[in-house]
Image 1 (cartoon, rainbow, N blue to C red):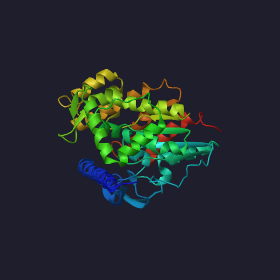
Image 2: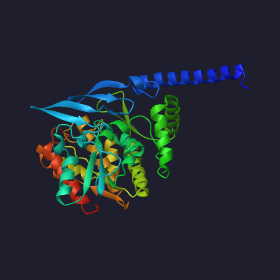
Image 3: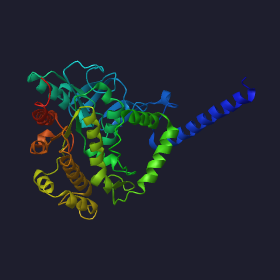
Image 4: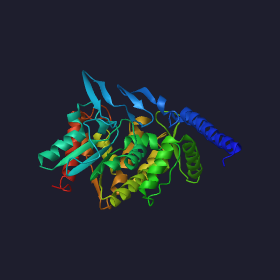
Amino acid sequence: MIKKSHIVNFFIIILSLIFLEFSSSIIIYSIEKKVGLLFSPFSYTKISQIEYKTRWDKKTDKIVPGKYLQKNKNRIIEYKINSKGFRGKEFTENKNSLNRIISLGGSTTMGLGSEYDMTYPAQLESMLKNEKIDVEVLNFGLSSKSLSFIRKLLFSEAINYDPDLIIIYSNRNPALYDSQGTKINIEKDNQNIFIKKVNLFLVDNIMTFRLIFKTYRKIISMSISSDKIISPHNLNVEHNIYYFTDQYKDTLEEIILFCKQKNIKVALVKQAVLFDEKIQKKIELETSENLIETLKNLRNEPLYDFNYAESFWITTNAILNKDLDLLSHHENTIIIDPVHELIKNKDNFSDYIHLTDKGNTVLAESIFLKIKDVLRK
């Protein structure tokens, strides 16, 4: 027989857990503006990114489905966010083609600034279909998102869509966002998808778990030695050199090994930035070790006539692109280098990083030439 005291004790435990989760949710929200299950009914908000506005769902960490407008120079572009929170046509978990490709990346992949049929994933799909390849290319690009987000998106959601090949075009955002704060020692050998999904669910939804998990990683991070450099955009922010020597490459390798188990091919695409073609080609000839030393001293010795911010982007871009070459030995991995084709014509860029319609075509063609023969016909 259940005693009254047992019921009281049960409710005390439940209320204590709710209070703990409420307190953790307040702490996490104040630091990250991140919400879990407890605050999810209040998760919609409007934010500005570059020259467009979206309704961002903090719970799913994706854009709220609907139609949006973006001002791009002298034209207004309407873009659609589908029911899954991504740009483009609707799709289901069931394949509608022999080959399914998922494009992962930031704003260049998402293709803001271009009509949908001129984004690189859409152009790539058209090129492949013109070769009589039965294929669909899903655009999973989300603006301002980095490699850590791509990793989470792949393990928690993208894998459910049974891709045959994934494309990762992500260099600038990881350099800006992922190299800040906690240094992470990637567990490349742990490839259990169930464990990964449970961990990601708890981190995203249970803020008490998130707080404990982040605290644990902070403690572990202290055992990883790393030089630091000041952010080019915020004097109060530091970037870990460890990210450029180890963490970026290790994160990609974790993804590659996971995909190998699932018979998924991985196309890693070097990202282009545009400052000065001749100087950038000279810098690309430097070894990774020399570039790391250059990065450490950039604050006092910027490159050539560039300022610190420009020097930071040129150097980190070259380092992370070189990291991709170190992963070429994996049998399920394809390294694609569109950089020289892109930077030789400034008309390919709308600024130093984002591409025009023409630039998207160059990028799509570079990927097309490398993957067309590995797809099923």
